Each structure stands twice: as structure tokens, then as C-alpha cells.
Length: 261
Image (cartoon, rainbow, N blue to C red; front, top):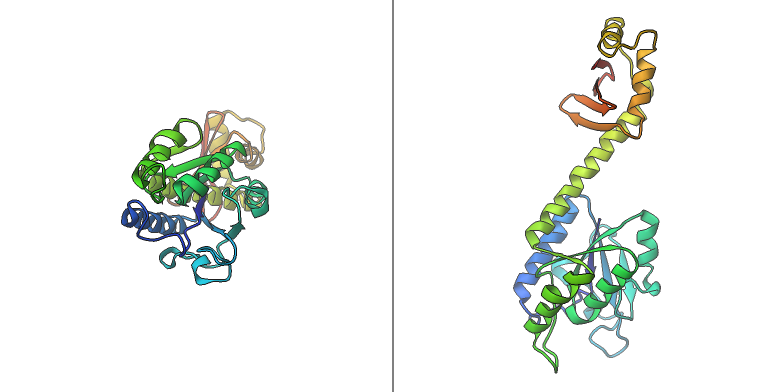
């Protein structure tokens, strides 16, 4: 998953936006939680050219100070509405990482957010839009509240994105850490697969439990651990590998096969 922050620049992120304080606090909250849970945060910046409110090279072009990028977080630049336009390189970058789920926040609802959400959908990404994390201004045809509600409560969720609450967004971001930890645990076990062993007594017990007869118990367990069907979890001091109806228990420090049944 990526948290994509669209056009939250000093020249356009201000108190004239609909529900400004709520949107500002929600964006800050999601950025913080994403960082805490290892979810990549990336920013998009819009350049409208010299003499505009979004003139590259001026202070207005920079990201709003309360949620500015840190630690070399990526920035993608554009002079069109969609962050997924080929000029930004964002689509290519995401596809190179195999990233599919893009939580999208920022401004303006009826301009760059709308174009980005629809373009992201058309490029095959799963777009997620948390409520009250985007906003816009009044325009000659409808006021800013109407504009916000039209896109968030009517347009996007019907075809282009999954529109969720901020609380649901927080849960999604937090679940990414759990998924990452599981992947790391598995990789640690795989990296140490050659250290897996058992005692003579343990081997005899496993043979009896599983009716293996004349089989190298350690090699049998290794093959099962490496199986695509293996479900691996780490709980306390041990790994538990569930595969083909059997459960193999391996000590996480010594890599001793404790039992299998």
C-alpha cells in the first residue's frame, strides 16, 4: 500500500477549503500512522507556471509545513491534473514495486483529486479514499460543500474507488505493519532453513506421529516449510508451520524441530 498525498501545497492548502481544520487534522493523522506502520508516503506537487499560486521555485510550491515530506520521501511533479499522467513517473514506479492499493488524499476534490482517482482506477490500481481527507473551494456552479459531497458521497464510490471512513483507513494502515511483520518472519525462517535440525528422540517421535517410516525427518520438514501451501506464523519463541494437515513446530532461536503432528 502507498499513501499518496496530492497537491497539499502552501499555495492552495488554506482555510478557504471546505472543512479545512478537519481535513488538515485527518491528513496529518494518516501520514503519521502510515509512517509508524511502514507504509510508504509519497507526495505530488503541481506546477501552474510563473506568476501563479503554484509557481515552482517559490514558497507557495512547497508542501504545507504541517505534513511536509521527511527522510527522502518521494515527490512526483506535474503540470496536469492527474498524478498518474506519464509525465510524473508515478504509474511506472508503482508497477515496478508491484503496488496495487493506493490510499489517496489531498486537494482539490473536483480537479486533481478527481482526475487522479479516475486515472488510477483506469491504470488498474485499487484506489482508497478516506472521508474528509480531501477538499476544495467554491466555484461558479456549486459551493465547496456540494462539490465535496458530490464526489465523495456520489461519484467516486460508485465506480472508481473504495470510499471509507478515517477510522477504517487507520485500521488498514495499521494492518500493513502486521502483514509486513509476517513477511519478515517468514523470510528469517527461509534464510535459516539450513540450520533446521532435530534430536534423535525428536526424529523418532515425529516419525511415529506422522507415520513416516524410513524418511529423513529434517529434510521432510524442510520441504514442507518451503511448500507454497505452507502457512507460517511466529508465536512467542516458536514458528508454527501448518501444511497438508500437519503442524510443524520449530524453535525460533535454535531452529530445532520440536515436534510435528
